[in-house]
Image (cartoon, rainbow, N blue to C red; front, side, top):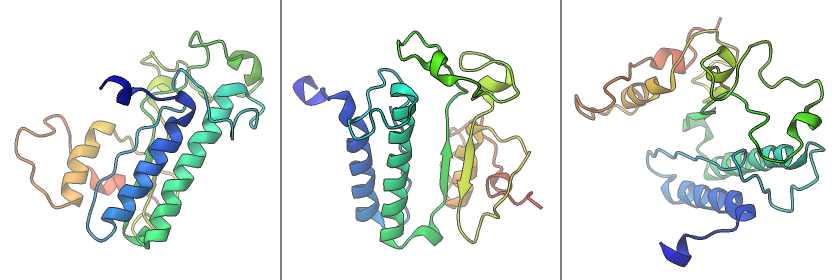
Length: 191
């Protein structure tokens, strides 16, 4: 609390990456779960000066470059720990894109012909496809077959699927709405 709770926005990604890297190094010899939630694309978007002006897409694009760097630092730590072959990595988002969120970042102007929502309608704050269909990348060398799956998978189902993967029983009241779909998560349906 107090002064210890304050931070400078441009250093949030560095702090998140450093804490994740330290956690991986400290726990590499035992099973662990690490959730990394970044602030990069959320407002206020104020990327570190290392990334400012690098994307040509304003602070929004620069924040995406910063997010990519954070993911890269975490993957590098997993590799340095020698645990890539034994680590399930999931990269996803909480909602679809929003371009005009009231933040003066010239995002609409700089977007040009790019459509982050693809062929779908809607976006963040919408129940349409572009608001609910999000990136969901799963990587586990030797366990997850590379490819693209068209199977529907809900973030809610991560809970029960991870519970099964970890061979844990967290009790009948845990994850009440979650259904176990580990086979989908591990992309066993890819041909």
